[in-house]
Length: 457
Image 1 (tube, rainbow, N blue to C red):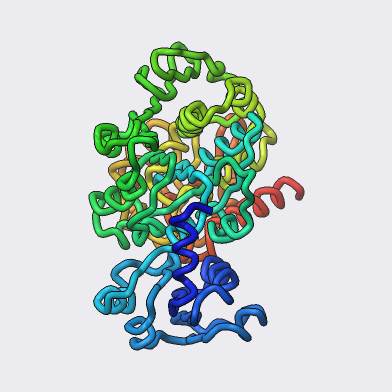
Image 2 (image 1 turned 45 degrees about the vertical axis):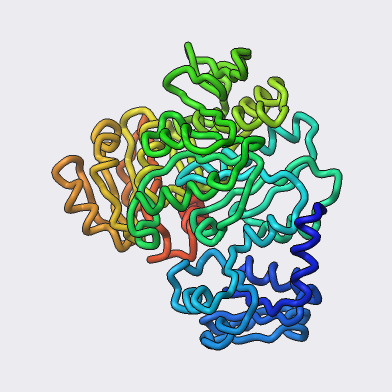
């Protein structure tokens, strides 16, 4: 642990620390902080009944509501990702001179291992997982955490001196209160309209994503998607080194596609990675994900053989263009992770014609014009579910055949009676899941089970 990290750790011993939000991240923080600060207070607006005895016996708890004085009198407030920056009690802490940080930033301050971070609206999990395989296949010792499932504080708590890198997926929610975070390598996969209810506008959303880059120094590197018009200008901002990736044109440093082959380039040294046809995962978005992973891997010292091996062998993650069934000439695809129109657009464009689309869910009021060209070019009918069904139907009904059904079960049942060989059924909601499901995972699992039941019977 470096001197700066040791000083931060030492200072904790004299501080009253509040952890706000007791989900997975808050519980991990609480377990870590026990015995490391003067007083630890955990607080949640809901009643929390499933905490372990270690927390309950060593921590002051405030559940079922927040107390104003708790946020006024503490020394450090660590906020869970689900709590927005403009939360009333967070603003009280700011007004009282309390230092407020995210779990991501808090964990980073305690670590001495170079941090490789990826953010973006779509593709960040797949890109990070591809990169982790490339690095591991190249002999690097890594650990992975953040928004990908394991809180970063867990990774840092268990890190060892022999680690080469910590890889972290970081969401916009985690970046809001990460004012001094400085990754050694930072990547933005893309930025499309999403979470506008929290970030107010696409401009605000981009500015939050760009926080991942703003503290980097000349020895660090940022990687930008050159094909994304919203992020492309970030190539020219900051003193850090810049790499880009593109599936449309050659780049100066990074990764690109030419004549259906993937190349990496560094200081005019061009190396072929693989043929596009060798990439197991279908779709333009997965090609972009692989390009980003290759650009990062190349900078970090990975070898070409490891990149090609990953291209050939990486089978993808559940709920992301996951092929559930391929029987009787009909392909059923689970893309439940597509919670915004940008992700669904890329999924549709990655397929051939004759797509039957199941879409809908908790409506984010996204701009449907963005996805319309893709739907008109590939989709023959849309089955609409959930809270957004009526608005989607009113928008699309004059462009493509649409039908409102009550739920996912009704959609699968209706489609199975009329789908024919050569067609593809794509479940890519373009919406959040919270109107009918706990999360996109439960939603995707439900779709998979419904399809499998149809073909088992």
